[in-house]
Amino acid sequence: MERPDEGGPRQPIAQTTYASEVSDHRGVKRRLLPASRARGLLLLGANRYHHQYLYKNPGGCCGVGSSDELFGSLLLAEANQPGLILFGTFISTQPNKIMGASVSGPGRPSRATVYQRLDEAVRELRDRLGGLPSPAEAEDIWSDIWHQEAHNSTAIEGNTLVLQEVEKLLEEGRAVGAKPLRDYMEVRGYGDAAKWVYGQALEPGDWQNGDLITLQEIRQIHHTAMSLVWAVDPHPHATPAEGPGNFRQHEIAKFPGGMKPPSWPEVDSQMRDWVKIVDDLRSEAEEPLPERLAHVHNRFEQIHPFLDGNGRTGRLVLNLILGRIGYPPAIIYKRDRDKYLQAMRRADNDEFGPLGELIARSVTTNLYRFVMPAVAGPVKLVPLPALATRDVTENALRVAAARGRLRAVKGDDGMWRSSKKWVNDYLKSRHRRS
Image (cartoon, rainbow, N blue to C red; front, side, top):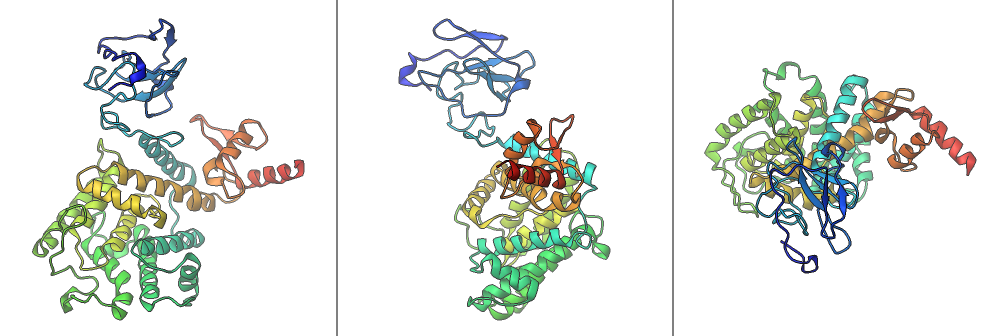
């Protein structure tokens, strides 16, 4: 692929070329930095003012250089793959895609970076803060997540309650507003199920049989989430044997993307196989964990084990699994509904990256927004993202730390850490200066 103003096609760089610098079309030498200095994957573009260069270093990793420094690092096995060109608009025949890797737009971290941030946040929680607290130990954390999850997960399915109405309903049992009774019962049931999931994930008691999750737990989640709304608005085609907690005995029509759930007599056996897939999450694998979780979540929705409530139950089940492996819950926000559904359709075609990224972003956000600040208290050091608020952004804290205005410690991993107390002191001094 080429641009008309590039002066004609360029030849692919040879696989055996190892260089620390290359010459552009004017003969000017351009320096290429090691791939270890790369900032991540970028959408590679070129115009008459800005040229980029593809090279392969002896370590087997390709890189891309701009006018005087390396812009990104590309995990390509071969530098002379079809579609790769020395100068051009894209180094792949598909825009926004590089040999199946994730490419991010300007200002947006790559998928690999999103996964890395999740790993770093989880290590921080486990190694420095003692892991996830139980609901009894940190009720405020779980209450905040509880409200957000119950609101957003039901809103994805069309529930009309706003967040303040959800909070009143779950905390005080008050039905504020004039919404359909079904909506209140749906949120109340989901809230009860979510609270059960948080406790069950960390303190399973007699429910556990050694598996990461059991069919009994899945049925219990569905029963708790659906019983209240079913009492006021049951599924019109349900038989007595298909109530909350029972697998369906009806066929399900094809999904919008063309995927059709299995015939109902196959549901029980396929769910037993699904439990084994979940258990495999404990083993090491080359595939990133968020994408393995995406596969598990998508497969549950493909089986569609219940007549109604599969989306809500599937997200609750995902959070039970996350809790079991030491991660906080994922919240799919209603603003991301279209992105979530598109990611699910792509997962139907075995492309788990988009859904994995959505899950990873959500879990990381919950770690920094809810869990770490509460677990750390006022004096323990935590990464700056956990201290960001509406009043001060993560970037502002990082700049203040680098300039010595915010008391912070930079670890061997390159990450700045501070405390609530130090941030409050900084904010007070900032207001005094202004």
